[in-house]
Each structure stands twice: as structure tokens, then as C-alpha cells.
Image (cartoon, rainbow, N blue to C red; front, top):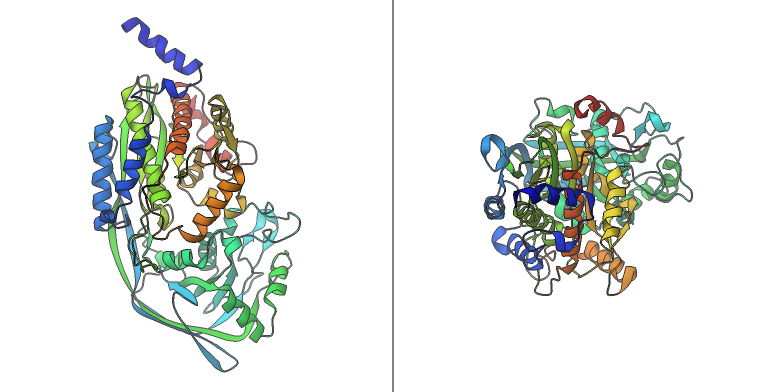
Length: 548
């Protein structure tokens, strides 16, 4: 038996890994479904960070990783890594209004606007702050773009469009066509307008360029917001931030003597300059409850047999949106079944099958990350405080939103990452008789909305893998219809829940591909890499000497 063990490792490196090769009896649909059913149950209260739901989630994931047979991979031999955060939430009612042409229009928080603050204050009092339209709110010298043109925004509230200037244009321009760049993300817009000195920001919500409806904005915006602790937090946040309904924006522009669509077209050109919305001003007042909390990443480890200082990471975020306003059925729990109990279930199942087989040459980390829904906070904290050297982390395979609707012919990755892992995923899927589909919805900007992005910014080759759309039962049309219905009705809503009709057979196939890809990277000597055109290539190349 001893003499055959190296041959087994060699065969795993040299031969495609098929479902029959996976240890521990293979990937179990029953286990995947059970994990989701538990994690998305009412008892877990929507898995919000720093709530009793977190305590139950952490306990469950730790127990399952222990049963899986991997070792603790957290701080000082523990299962977890503390992630300190500042939590801010509106405390009580919000009073807001817009005044234009002498007429005062009250605004209802949650319906007309969603207002919040991460500024280090306990109360927001903005009185008659002028509204200024700043287009897409982008300054990008490398693309020849500056929406501000030196405008003085001190004491003013910026009205800004979501996504990039190219989203609604007939031909691609400076921003990669409909494939959203980081400049299109709402997080960037908030950060840039803080740098520009604005007192507040209102992003105009439009469903197509945002890639989700107002119900998602409302659910997210009325929840607590989180940030890392900062001594100089006022530099990073405007006092007031939030979203406004498109219809409200159109009405304000019209009453200010402007045409919203015409101004939007003007904002799609580099010649755009900011313009005041007539004499429109915004007033808003509300109390802010701020406290410091500690949430946690959960990390299991399987030490590599030959090169334990080199690492491959499987990750998924465990958090969802907790308890909010009840829906039409009276359910207020945002269960987060697809997003992202499916990813956590996959990580647990991958830990089990890897632990059941021969140890790969590189170490494996199995991570359930916190506070992804609050701005990738858990992943960002780990990347800044890694428990395995990032320069010797070969790859991050992040998992998001696997399908509950049965088998697909394909598997997909999020965004266009310009990373060799995308080609590897395609090749591995094809050895298993599957197809690979590049992200079919690049304009949604998913590349910047998942935890792999935090690792990518630190230079680590990383992708997020999710379900494809080409269903065995119904093809692409059926898959697209199901996806669109989910984002319209259930994304971040109570109806993202496990049901008895859940069919995890497609999840099994996707996790089999993920096992094969991770096994290949963990057994091999090669280092996945960023390709030409990637904004992360130079960061990774800066640590090339560590991988010689």
C-alpha cells in the first residue's frame, strides 16, 4: 500500500479528475441541500453579522468543518478570525424633503429615497444643501475622464448616475462598453464624492444599470451599514449618502428646467460638466446609532503534504441581510438560501471530500467569510491580515449563488477577470462533459461585487464561480427566465429561501468541477496568473521573487 500512494498522487496530477475519482463517496446532493436548509432556516434569522444569527451560523459551520475532518485554520489554532467593524444604522425616524422653486416636497425614506450614513457622527442635520448633478461621478485620468472639472461641492449634495457612461450608449467608449468597470460601482461613487468634498450623495436608481430593483435597494439601505474602524473616517465618507427613485429624479430635473434623459446623454461624453438642479435643495435629519462590533471569518485548513506554505483557498460568504420589513406573506427574514448558503454548503462539502482523500501538495483553506453584503468586509480584512502568505496563495476559488433548479450543461464565472483561472475552469469543465460560459451579464458588475475581488486587489489570482444558464431541462431560455425572476423577486428578499422542491443536482455538478480545479492547482507546481490587460497583474508581479 505504501508504494502505491505516490502513484495515486501522480495520477491525480496527470489525469482529469472525474466524479468517480472524488473521495468520500463523492459530492452529496443531500448534504448540500441539508446545509442550505439549516443555514437558511428561520432559526438563523437571516445570518446578519453581529447578531444571534451569526452565533448560530459560526457554530454550525465550525461543527460541520470539524465533522468534515479538516483542522482549524483561524488565529492561534482557533476556527475563526475576528473582523472588527464599525456598525451604523438609522436610529428612529428620518425626516427629509426637497425644496425647489419655493415648493417643499417631503420625501419618504424607503419609498422616495433611502438615506444612511457612515460618517463618524451621532446625528445628521443637513439643511437646504444645494443639489448638483455630477453625471456618473467619475474621475479617471487614465481614461481621459473627469466629471467634476474642478466643481466646488463643499456643502452640496451630489446627484449621480449608477453604472458607467457606456451602459446606454450605442457603441463602446472609454468604459469597456456595457461591461461595468469599478467606476460604475456605487461603492466607488460614495468614495469619490467624499474625496470631492460633497456633504452628501444621492445615486439615481435605475433597474437595468443597477442590475436590481428598488426592493433590493430598500432592503439593503434600511439595514445597518458597516466599515472598518478608521481614525480619520470623516475623510472616507460624506455625511449623508443614499439612493433616490428614478421618477423622483426625473421630476426634479423637469421642475429645474432640465430634461433627465438629455442630461444623461450629456453625461455620457467626456465634455460633461456638473450642473445645479435649479435652486433645488435637500434637507435631511436623523439620528445615527454607531457601535463597534466584532464579526468572524470561519477558516478550516488541510495542510499540504509537500509545500504547506503554498495555499489554495475555497471561499464563500456566510452572511445575509437578517430580519427586515415583512413581505406580503408576513415573512421578514431574508434567508439568503441561494445567496449564499449554497456557497457555504459547497465549501463544507469540498472540505469533507478533500479530507477523505490523500492530501494535496499545497495546503487548502476552506473559508466562510463575513460581511460580504456590507462591502466585502470579511474578505478585505483577511487580505489585509492573511493567515497564509498572499504571495504564496496560488488561487482563490470563491463560490456564489449555485442553482436550486437542477442540472445545467454549463458552469460560469463572474465578470471578465483576465485571469488564467477562467481558462482552467473552462478546460476542467469540458473534461467532465460540461460547458463554460463567460459571465452573460457583464453590465451588472458582478466582478466587483464578490469576495474574490478583495483578493484580486491584493494581487492573488481569484475568480468567483457560479451556476451557468444552459439548463438541461429548458436550455438557456429557461435558465435566463429563472435567473431574471430571482433577481426581480427574491434577491436579498425573504423569498430567497430553501423549499422542498430544491434540486441540488446542478450544484453537485458545479462542486465536482470546483473540486477538480482546486485539486489540479493544489497538486501542481504552476502558479495561476493575471493576463495582459488585468489591473492586478502588476501587483502580483511585484511578489514574483517569492514564488521562484
